[in-house]
Image 1 (tube, one colour):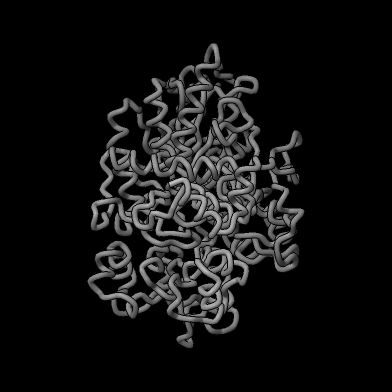
Image 2: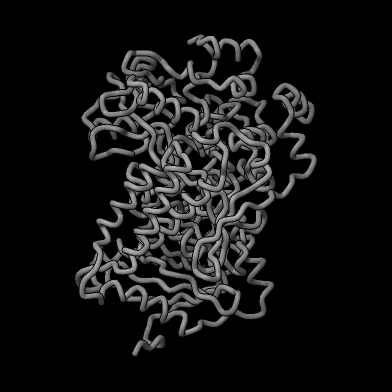
Length: 613
């Protein structure tokens, strides 16, 4: 007989799940608001995916080009997201990002500097001006270091190597979470008035991904099971430059900073092919002048901004096109060449991590030889549907920020916006939680039977005498998503993918992990697999419903953007019968001022910003 009173129980005002940049930012704010704050992470503190964000953090500081302004950043973000972003989130992001970067600097972040001593900024795809504040190509690592060094003095309790299993509710309200210690397999119950998910994405559902083992869609799935909605799940970003060779590092990210520092993409014939892949509308919207747009489209190699810095969806599709045409690199990608564009000492100074990564892991010297790269599943624009100002989901007491929340990036995320996103919305989530907690009279109670159901479901995987191998099921899932829900989609492929997912779900009901609960990675794999399959199914079903091509979602059977879909989001929730419900919902209309800013020509906007200055 399971006795909940014997399970370790810890109480906090708020529990933050995930210790990357978003989780740390949220925890720091919650603590500063006087809340008892617990922070749990699956791995060790400091191992979050934020450290993989190398190129920089996007904020309209105007240090390198003083024409930059939050309105221009907002306009770039909306256009990069194909106008499907939540307008208010894009506004808050652009307005608050400079303050969050300066706050990091006050907390000790050591950014690269201009000759005048200001925070340096570099060019990045889709950004009008040099906007990415950076620390070489180790920006994410510096952000995590700074947040951790600051956060440890704020009275936050950190629980490492602790995996969340499912949320607890008392009626409609969040009351806590059941988790487990990864080392011992023992369960733990967190009682909390609010939970903030900052769990990242679910890229491990695909075979080729820049994501590591932690990215299993935990927040997406636990929120879904608790009654929250998921939004925009069809928009999965394939970063154009992941390592293609050797196989031991396949999918590992090659930062956009390589292209920002002058790297060019060439095919097996030595052709710089991006000039043949510039969308005419994009050129006219992005170039400084009509003359520059014409030079781009004419293939002028001396154009000020290279086409390699077009948005990620455009570059990823261009590489795939070269491979399909038989002009790819030997291992199914393209060549990224910075050696011919920059001096060796400059490359080592500007891109130290990239130089080291290729030298050690691939035995390749990027100062003399080109890299072999191709698209890798990198980021999920979709996620938990939240209120733009408070970051609370439709489940009272459940908040989300960072990659696991949806709406900010629309149909495609601009590089560098993820780091400013997690800083801005992590803090706003903390503010939102404090307001929520102060508005409730008492913390919700723990329902013993609900906790027992969660624990029994987890231990059933160990107690079966025989069953399906979780590692083999995961491999089948990866192959299915890579083949049928990849960078190019069609109804035929998506339906096949969904059929395969339904079969995998049946097999998962009989999944078996051998061994005891202690030190059992097979058990951890099986537990994560449920979350991966929910996340994967939400992507496949959303992609099937959206019958157009927009941003990171490309349907060969519905080419081009459709105006009717610009007014709609695809939303997922769990039905009363336990099945996944997919529906098309009307988007909230923007206020007139935001719509006006987004639709101004760049010349008009520059004049307006100059007038304000």
